[in-house]
Image (cartoon, rainbow, N blue to C red; front, top):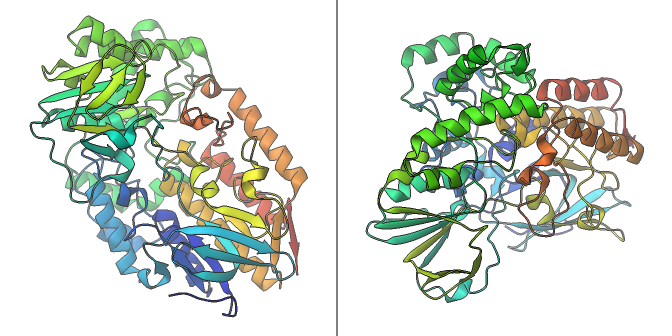
Length: 537
């Protein structure tokens, strides 16, 4: 369906139909607003629609990585595993879309290409790659923090005669690697999940690693019905704890002492207990792991020793042992048999720091040392995180600068919700908000609810325009940087800082002050009449 400029303007256009976009449709409709969403995929699910690679699984426990807005929904849905796999999460997303009748608001297989704000009419004109041109009062970015896959620009990609895959754009029909020679490039979260699965099928698997990462065993298991029943009996208590926790996860520890407050033997016992729990909350066992390098080193060495004991070849173990960053300053991973995979006879590890990849050839991968032949190459090279999906759209004001131009030196927002100079543009889990450092469902629900209440406030007050004030934005950006600099996070070359994208400004993208603290700040801003935002009729 193509709308014209003469059509009655909508209340909001939403980009994306993942968990953020679906909830935005639900909440804004609930408030009586006319909305339209556009989704590049053929169906709902966002990152869980695209990431179908073998082993794709959530690293937040299923009972927490789910919506909390509907008591009926959270009671009726039964999870099969402690950590749900991609297929189950996608079924859940489809169940939500059907249960709440969201599909009729979504234009599928449609990518938003541009949005232009007209200050005379206070309306956004949004265009898509299918010819839609719609006008709306508000423009809501719900495209996700990890949704724009990064394919390295190696020479020769078009020459390869085998099959090329990216974990973020996996074929829906699946891939059979049986008997094939496979090369995998990348050992971040998706690489760590996919490598053990491919190793079980491939005749030969070569992993090309630039940076070894810290990873913990997930100890995934079938959902215990009794545990789920007891958890759901007091779901409201768990959800409230999550909303005011640091990572938006109720199950994470809330420590009161530092690592060096315990004697070495006791510290070792604590680490062992945390290891066996199998959660990303491992780095929160002590309160200073992510701020004190000495404390951090005790935990890092504990995990390094686990790797050495697991990988039988000492040389391979050394290559897999992270030494160039503090544990937790890059996304800590949960795995199922990752390090054990390197004990297989059909798996080889290559270090691209000492043996850089030069190009892709017709037959495989060429490094500075040799040519390697493969039937298939898998890129587990991640995403243009947090800002990629937003800047992939040409967003600008009529007669003014584009958002990309404003963010040339890095993103600037107020609370991660809006950016000065672009009225009526809202960012769900945008840069400068806790986003990727939290349970994304907790952060998504918070942002959507804040935005929905804000739009109702504007409507009730007869306001048609809202914009972040530059002074408040500057103060927030400074605060985000100060809080990050008080931790060890900025010391790592991670996608949290955009370091995985050549030429991307090095800025710490999320807010590390904790979801609970951030939530309180956002509530204070709203209760003070949306302090820091200019509202006009």
